[in-house]
Structures are given as structure tokens and as C-alpha cells.
Length: 344
Ligand code: ASP
Image (spheres, rainbow, N blue to C red):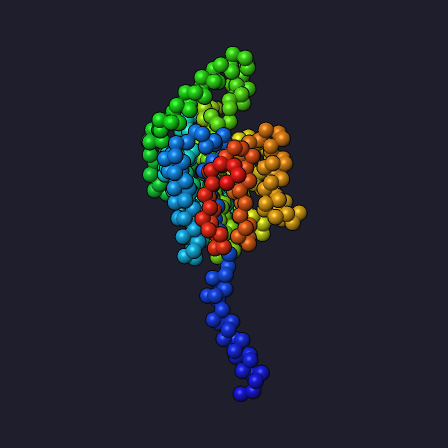
């Protein structure tokens, strides 16, 4: 056997044995959020802060494990969001805020970066994990967004159990509703209509949401967002969370984004899609693009909130323009990070 043939055989062998080692070096990453707003250290007891941090860590670790074991980014996103939806701490699922009428209406969406498939549900009242239903819409229907009773009918057809709306009741959220209504009633005396009164409410009465973005070892990006919306919302108000391009966006060529904040601004400024467009068309990094949109575009016009972003190389960015954002991240090159306040 001459040396050339031997060289070819050796390199062919190395090609055959290389996939496992290549897989080890493929980047994978996840980031999660549990809402942005007026979140200040002075409002927490040390025990409360610890409990929030532990829940964020649990969610990011569960998603990370899926990725580490070679699972899909969509599964990592769903698993992480389920942990947050099942916790009363965050405004999604169990901890959903109250509508003006004293009920709960939930919104969620999910997007697959590989083919821009997407699913969303809006204004559902009896779904324990709205992110799972959004995924079902993506995978089992020809539609992108289903709302209200129709979405629940679809859920029934797919054997998703409907639960009592009162199961989302929590004492803290109820107190927030009462405070918000008190402020609304006062504001109404000076502002003629409800819309104006509602915009006079301080941001911390209104928000909170959960979300996750992930890159898996095969290079697929995914993003998902789930929320109870804004406290004292009315008239079937829907925020940005279930709107693809506003609260959620994923595209393998650029990035995956999940947003939290004052939904009306995020809808009007197509926040999630705008960030990825800057990455795609202007060659910006996700840190630059996120900062431009959150601090450059939204902040000057009063659009409060933040986003979590992951790109195709596993870089992570979590900009926000409020005093805090519940957040956590982890990648194959970055240890678990958990943050609540600004500057940590
Ligand atoms: N973006 C959500 C909404 O407007 C609320 C939030 O993220 O705090 O419904």
C-alpha cells in the first residue's frame, strides 16, 4: 500500500470517528426570563430572593440538561417554561395576574428557528401550560394562532385537559389587582377613558412574563414565551407574548428572542423580529442589536422591558431597561448564571 492510499484511508477513518468529538464541540446554550419591571432588592426578604433564584436555576438547568443530552431546542424551551409556568412566582400559568373582572387569561407562543414554524394561543382561560398548547398548535394544526374558546376546543380535541380558572388564583396577584383597580378608579376621575387610566398605572402593577430561548447541538434555535398578560387588563386585551415577531422570534440564520415588558410597545416596534433583523441584515452582534432596540428604540419612548437572546454560535445576551429582570443562562462554555437586579 503506498503512502497516498494510506493517507486517504487514515483521513477517511478520521472522518468516520470525528462526529462524536465534533458533537462535543458544537455550541449549545439556553437563557430564560421570568419578567422585567420595577424589581428592587429592598422588596425581597432574603428568603424570597433565595427562592426566586432557586426557581430560575431549576428552570435553566432543566432546559440545559435537555440540550446536553442531545435534545432539541424546542424541548429545552418547553421544559424550562413549564417549570416557570408551574410556579406561582411568575406571571404565567399558576402565577398569572388577574384581569379587571377578576379572572385569568393566558397567552403563549413558540417558534422553531429551523423552518420558522410557529404556534400561539391567546386569551385561554383553562389551560395549565399554555406553552404546550402553543406547541400543539404549531405541530398539529395548519394555523399559527388560536384564541379563546376556539383554542380550548382545539385543546379538547387533542386531549389536553381543561382546568378551572380559579386554579390560577394567588393571594399576591389578587392584592395587585385590588391596588391596580384602586389606582385605576382614582385615575379615571382625571382621565376620561379606561385606556388613559390604564396607562397611568405604574409599570410594576402591570407586568411579568416567562420565556426561554435555546440553541441545540444541531444548530437549531427556538424561542418561547408565556404570560398572564397585564394586571387589570380588559376587553380581551392581548399582549406581545403570543405575537410572533413581537414577543417571540427564532430563525436559525440570526437569533432567537423572547421578550417581556409593556406589550403594546413590543407589538408596535416588532421587537423580537427587529433584533434578529439587525443581526441578519446589518451584521450586528446580538449584544449590539439587543441594546439598540431595548435601550435605543424602546427606552426613549417609554417602552419598558427586556429580552433574552441566543445566536447560532451560542452567544447569549439579556438586555433590559428596567430596574430588574428575572433571568438565568447557561451554555457549554458558560457556567450557570442567575440574575434578578441590574448590574449583577
Ligand atoms: N409582555 C407582557 C404583556 O404585555 C407582559 C410582561 O411581559 O410583563 O402581556
